[in-house]
Length: 148
Image 1 (cartoon, rainbow, N blue to C red):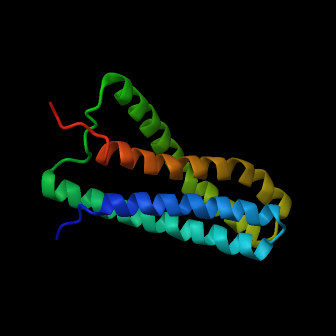
Image 2: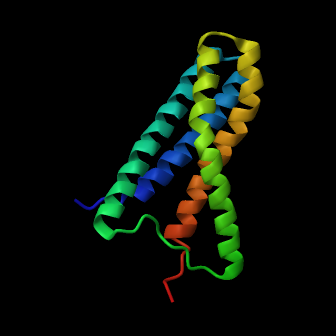
Image 3: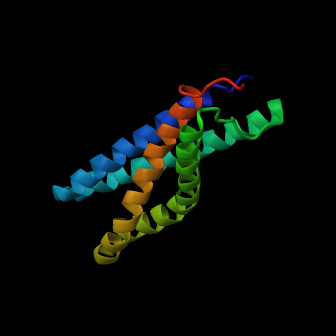
């Protein structure tokens, strides 16, 4: 089975998570707690679907090619930018599930003060991880030069 289409799905899921996070933020600023809760839960579900899809593609790629990643062959300045973004993306992505679960749990329990305090860290990190996931996909699959 060919799963080479999954990186595009993954980027789409990251983009959708980003949009849902922004909508959720706007909903709470408008005081619409129910819409905020539902939108943020939807963002979490979309992010979980991304993780399942990403791991599926990763496993498939290793089993088919014995390679764990796609190389970026851009010019040196682009490679430095790409790897800087990739490293920060990976490191922060490891924190998102934990931060998101804690933040959502506090929100569902209506521990609003604690929820707001941690959400001030969770939201920008989650937004960054979501948008850089899309940018990494674009750089790797659409702006990547062929190997020399």
